[in-house]
Length: 261
Length: 273
Ligand SMILES: Nc1ncnc2c1ncn2[C@@H]1O[C@H](COP(=O)(O)OP(=O)(O)O)[C@@H](O)[C@H]1O
Ligand SMILES: [Mg+2]
Image 1 (cartoon, rainbow over the protein chains, first blue to last red):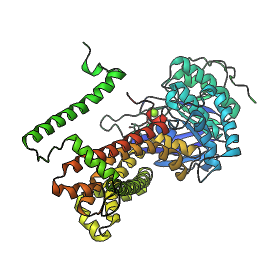
Image 2 (cartoon, rainbow over the protein chains, first blue to last red):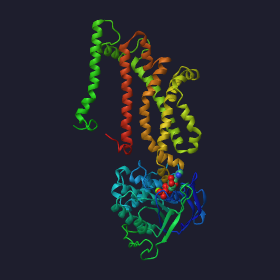
Image 3 (cartoon, protein in one colour):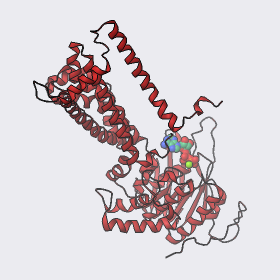
Image 4 (cartoon, rainbow over the protein chains, first blue to last red):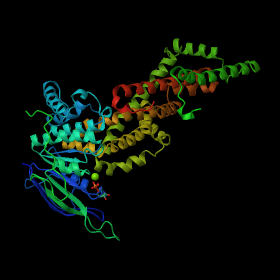
């Protein structure tokens, strides 16, 4: 289970209010797309759920208990950039997740433990279609391949929550479609709660079971930092059929690329 | 005609271009030396190459009558020992402190400004203090190199670690890494290529401090010899010694550059040729 509750959360940087009085109940296993204009606080919200930033006021709960206020293995993340370690090969990037858990002193595994970790990592790398590139360094990969690696890496720890901050924003439309076809079945199979920030409405509606829009509703021309963003739309997409508000048609669920085990 | 910045010499031309300036200097020296000898057969300033070769051969092969050691070998060994110790200690200090400053905000708050101030102390100004505290032996020479060379390494490594995108540190934590594991697997490996670059840049200053310390108080060493024979205007010793020191420094620099590129291929993938 991994339900997230956001209760009366405010985020302020100095005298700039970024998020004001946010309340959200996110059901376990849902896929929430977060949309909104740039600079309205979407990444800030995500960093808060991640534990990287702390709310100024209010509380965040995971299954009713306060979220740990620093990042941990319960919450995986894929950023838009800099998500993978440039000094590790594709394989090492994924294996690292297992090594941290099993080798507190060296952060490295050897012998049989290493072979088992490599086996698990190779399965994930295969699932994101990078098997042929497993000995390359990230710099030698295209943007789309780096993001696939970041997804494989985030999934290695089997997180309860997966946070994606414009993960496909820098990709061309074709690669982006491939990434959607990759992500959706993975999410369906693993059943974690996903929160994805995106600028692409088609992506938001195509992948999400729920779309939340952030925006500033009040503006003070004298003090632009006085008011923060609130939730302006909150759409449940789990019902079948067209979404009336924006006229988007929910595309049929893509066939899984990966055979589920 | 292409712009000057777009003209790239081919591989062969590149070697030729690299050799030409050295040849020019050699020719200028030989001509100058011959000219001065012609004017004054006792000239000491620009000894002919043959004389320097003779002196160098003697110093590099024949044992000294008084000490029984081959002078140049003994000098080189004691200088390199001091240099290696000094640079080694400075490198380790720089790496440890630099990473700690770069990754621990509390440690940075406590030690950051102290390091910034210490790195402004002119090392030569405290050389007398080192002689007073550590005596005239090896320790004060090594200490001078460490004090002169460690602060820039500390600061550079701290900045390198701070420049690691915060996303990577967060990523490591979401993979379950502790602070120690993050240092070991994320910060350290990304600091190492830069460490080698910084140490390369510090070879020059390290030699400077070594020779300065040897000039003042030593009984062997490359710097000691140069300053000893200065009294007799023995340019036939000084010039080969300077060339030898330069060659040693150049070889260290070259070896470190090679090491960095073979050990950390990922760090040089985008290097401009
Ligand atoms: N660490 C910070 N310090 C000060 N202001 C910040 C910080 N992080 C974000 N902000 C501000 O918060 C606002 C929201 O930023 P962000 O969450 O990145 O927006 P979005 O992801 O929706 O584009 C911006 O105005 C930004 O300037
Ligand atoms: Mg953002």
